[in-house]
Length: 190
Ligand code: SF4
Ligand code: SF4
Image (cartoon, rainbow, N blue to C red):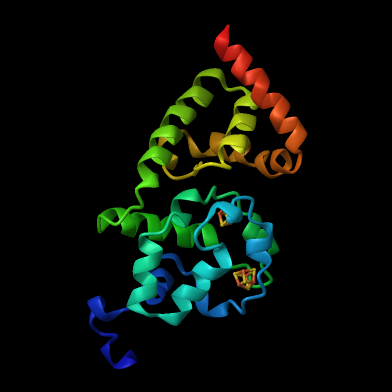
């Protein structure tokens, strides 16, 4: 395979990811800590450690599965996986790359449209209210299908980063999230 490396088309996704993001999936030794800490892994078709494993196999079949996966659209870019990874592998960057490629090749999972649409509406709402409880609503909605950072161009990234920092705590506090969620609904009904 390496003899074909001079031809761009024959490069595997792992090669392309390394070149474009400097993230080396080869460093992963499958400890599973990323998947254990990921708040949305239970909703994913392939949890984050599996995504990295599939890239390591360098097979067109697995690459195709990843580009058509729901996982890449569900990633919240919360960075919990990076915090836990002993090799500090930047999985959200990998997810970003896969999303872009998936869109380019017209392979986006059918759920991605809803996720993107919801996502846009939601970021608008955050931008308007600037309220913390809206983040609670996101934390709850992420259980269905959601990717907060799918399109960072929608909101100023610094602003979103500030909001994002709150997410992991909110997810841990399920009761708090439920409370915030119902408050938000009430507010919307007024
Ligand atoms: S950044 Fe994505 S893959 Fe990593 S823990 Fe968060 S949701 Fe999971
Ligand atoms: S935490 Fe890091 S090393 Fe462990 S499985 Fe995930 S990506 Fe691989």
